Amino acid sequence: MGLLAGNEGIAMKYALKADTLKQLVEGKLWNERHQFFETMRTDSSANVREAIGYIPWYFNLPDARKHDVAWKEVMDEKGFLAPYGLTTAERRHPEFRTRGVGKCEWDGAIWPFASAQTLTAMANFMNNYPQTVLTDSVYFRQMELYVESQYHRGRPYIGEYLDEVTGYWLKGDQERSRYYNHSTFNDLVITGLVGLRPRTDNTIEVNPLIPEDKWNWFCLDNVLYHGHNISIVWDKDGSRYHAGKGLRVYVNGKLVGQSDRLQRLICKDVLN
Image (cartoon, rainbow, N blue to C red; front, side):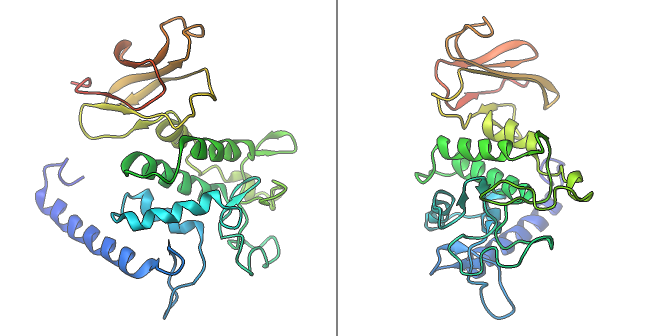
């Protein structure tokens, strides 16, 4: 932000802070035995894998490829993978879901707030790292579960946290729970699923995390981006929108990029 504002002093100040934080996170929070970023107690690691361990990728912090292995846990039923989404603590741990209900449990129940953080981190990992651990289908399935879980008594709803096996909202009938729409739903759809990747330059980068055999069409329309109106359209055979087949990107109504396949598309210098 400092560089964008032309303030090199501020930029240097916070770059040094960021470098220090990066060294501390990678040096102090990485548990070599568990191959995971874990929270610290006063004198030691908490020695349990928790979803918060994916937060470093929310900020594109890790560099070393050795950390990639942590993402295998989102595909492991003994890790975070559950019928209704990603748990907040690993399911293999002997104290998983042992604290009862109704007391802001972070010992395993699914929190959409935490799921949104993990999904953002996952999208960053899949877009910004040369990784081979995750595929589009992993992200897509977790987004499906994230969306499908947000119902209560047959109506759209988002609350604090839900049972990982039954999908039941554990505080669904309490007032404080139904005001919990703080989980960046729109951002997950725009930057993750459809894949409009934020950049500071005049280039538009789109990388949908949608398996090509899942959706025949979608349209993300009227997104205000860098002062321009952006639309991203996928029409597998051209029969839905009748504007041609494939992936298309429009700026202020003008076609600026296209691909026959659902893949990363970079439209250089189209926001001048």
